[in-house]
Image (tube, rainbow, N blue to C red; front, side):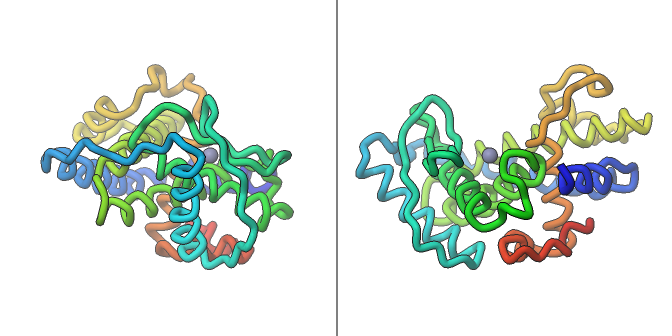
Length: 239
Ligand SMILES: [Zn+2]
């Protein structure tokens, strides 16, 4: 758990709160604007083997180029109960539920495949969960922003809702830990997006912390962090 410990040490400090607040405001403004535009609710649904494989190829092209990797191997994809990457079997499982997040989830799980192929070691895929999930969520958000330019924007709306829940969970967790009183405007955002009840005692997830950390790192070093990490350049893990 070396990298996760380092990430938590760098993330859970009082000084990150104003920066995190800024990111929450930006994502919430983007989400509100997207919701205002009455998005077209129709989205592609992946059901058959052909549809799944076609979508995977489309997603792979974008993610490989975003992460600057040349991955020749085509990973197996199946529909399952939840979306996940099975490292032992080298298979991507995509949740059967028809949701506008299918494409974004595919980008997320395909990123896990690349992480496990190209980063392990030094990043132990089944242990360093804050790192693994934060990196994959960052790629997923970037993918959804790109995809929404030419496709229905509903997938982007849903990933932003999830992201804001994770970011506000982390914000509330850090401020409670250091007993910081939040500005009224921020506490309204926390009420709107965070689903955790008692932030002091709440069990904060690797998704919450990972997204908060990578959002701060992206703000500081730019979107190239995701590709730099695939080259095992971890200097961008300073936030
Ligand atoms: Zn994941």
